[in-house]
Image 1: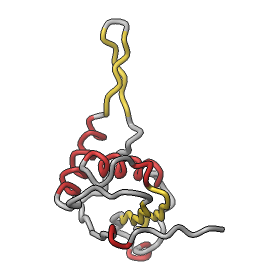
Image 2 (image 1 turned 45 degrees about the vertical axis):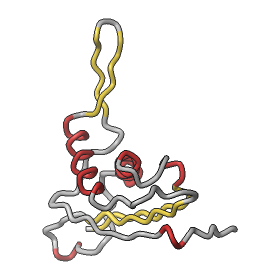
Image 3 (image 1 turned 90 degrees about the horizontal axis):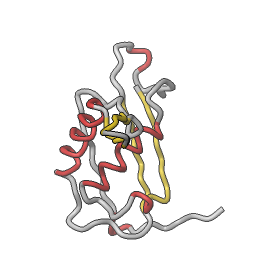
Image 4 (image 1 turned 45 degrees about the horizontal axis):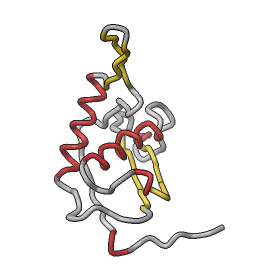
Length: 128
């Protein structure tokens, strides 16, 4: 087992509070045809979720893009009306990998890093 040492100078932490956590994911695409050619685009729901995330992320963008390997730790906290479930892990949709795809694509587009391939370590959780 090997541990990567991340550059401590490139560390940032922030919290984004959204009234509604996007349940649309980066995988949701639509296809239409123009002539004989397929055109692939984001669904309206997916595009709205992307715009919301990018608007929030743009205020937190680092002065310079992160370089080298990145460790990304994210906790998706979903609302619940059941007091007994508060703080428990969410085991229903959306899947964390789909949520992360949307987040990482949005972080790339808003200038956090050159490419989300730089994310070498991920710690992801979903809770209510």
